[in-house]
Image 1: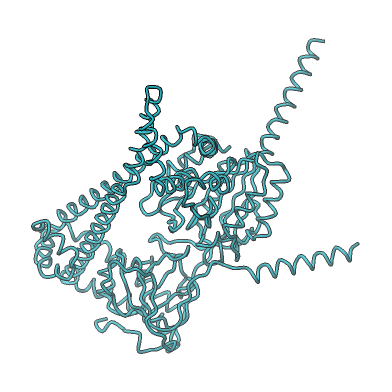
Image 2 (image 1 turned 45 degrees about the vertical axis):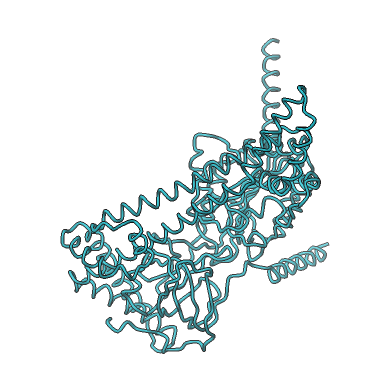
Length: 500
Length: 134
C-alpha cells in the first residue's frame, strides 16, 4: 500500500515537473530573424550568429527561426583578407547554407505570422533577435524590409504583461529600440507624457550601434558573445552590453536612451530648476535643511552635466584621436612605400614577377569587360595561380624586410626624401621636435601616441557617463519624479532579467 | 472542396509573388558608367587583386581596381584612400564590381563615400590605364 502511495506521488511529481517545464517553454518564445536581404548580401557570418544563438538555447526555449530565403538558400562568404570570395572570373562565389535547422523564409508575411502565433500562445516572455542588414528606414528581410514603425506596432500589439526583449545587431540598430520618429519635448511639463508614450514597462532592447551608426561585424557579433557564455545557461541584455567593447560604434540599451531623452529635457529647462531652488532658499528653515541640501546636489549635478564643458573636452579628445589616426595612416603609407621601394631595389626580379603577374590578371579582367579579347576560364585560372604565388612570395619577403640592417639605412635616407609627401606625419613630427630614424621606433612611438589619444577619449567618455549617472540619481530621488522612476526601473529590470 | 483548396493555393501563391515583387529591398547604391570618387579602405583579396571596401547605408560595397599605377596601389594597401575610378559597366550590387583605377587623391577627411564626377559612355577603352612599366 505504502509502495503504491509513494509510486503515485512520484508519478504526480513527474507529471507536475513535466507540465511546469512545458509551460515555461511555452511561455518563453525566442524569435531569431536573419533577413539576409538578397543573395549577394546574405553573408555566412549572419548565419553563424543565428546558429550560435539557436544552439545556445537548443530546446530549452520555444524557438522560431526566419533565415533569409529559407532552407537551402546559398550564402556568400569572406576570404582570409576579409573580402567577399569570388570565382575565377571575379563573380561572387555562393556556398551552401551552413544553417541546417528548420526555418522559414524571412519575408514580412512570415514575420507577422510568427508574432501573431506568439501572441496567440499568450507568450509571457518574448525575445527577438534581429541580425543582418539595416538602414535608416528599417531592417532587411529577404528581398524585403520591415520599417522601424512596423516593428513598434508589432511589439505594441502584445498585452502589457508580456515582457519583450529585443537584440539588434544590424546597422542603425538604435532605431529599433524606441520609436525613432519621437520628438523630444522642449518643456519639462511635457516630459512625463512623452516618456509614457514612447517607453514601456514591458519592453527593452540592446542595440549594437547608435541610430546613425553602421554596425561592423568585427566590432560586435552574437557568435562572439555566445562563445563567452559557454558555462552559463542564460544571459541578459545587460550582459550583452557589457561584452560589447567597441571602437567604431556605440552599443546601448533602452534605459540609456531613456536617460539621454530625460537629461536633454532637463538640460534645456535648467531655468525651471534654478527658480525652484531659489524659492526653496528664500523659504529655508531647519526642517527644510535636508531638502535644500538635496536641491544643492541636484543643481550641482545639472551644472556639471549640462554646462557643455565635459562635452567640449570630449569633442577635443575625439579630434585628437582622429588626428593621431591620420598621422598613423600617413606613417603606415610612408613605411609601406619605403619597404616596397627597398624590395624593388634589392629584389628586382621578385618585384617584377609580382607586378607582371597582377598586371596581367587585371588586364585580362579589363579585356573581358571591354569585350576586346576572348579569354578562357582556364587561362584566367592560370593567371590567378601565378598572381597568388607571386603575392605569397612577395608577402613573405616584405615581412623579412624590417629585420635587415641594410633596410634601416635605406629607411633613414628614404624618410628624409619622402616625408614631405605625407603632410600630416610631417606636421606632427615638426610639432614634436624631431623624429626617430629607426622604423621600429617610429612605429612604436606613433602607436603609443594613438593609444594615449584613445585613452583620453575613453576617460572623457567615462566622466560624461559618471556625470550623467549622478544627475539621473538626483532626479530619481525627487518626489515629483516618482512615475518616471518607476518606468525607468521597470526598463532596467527588463534589461537585467535573464533570457533562458 | 478540392477546387476551393486549389483556388486558395493559387491565391496564396499569387499573394506571395506580389509581396516579393513589390517588396522594398535595401537600396544598394547604383554606380552608372563614368568617373566617380570613392572613399574607403584599400585591401587585397586572396587572389592579390586590389579592392576598396566602402560601407554605406547598411551595405558593404566592394570595388575591384583594374589598371593604373601598380606601385601606388601597393603602397596604399591597408589604408583608407580616396580613389578616382572609372565605372565601365553599371554596378548595381557586389556581383562583379570591376572598375578602372585612375589615381588616388589626398582627402583624409572626405565627407563623402561616393561622389559622381562625370557621366561618361560605358566601356571606354581609353580609361583603362595599363601600367607602362608592367
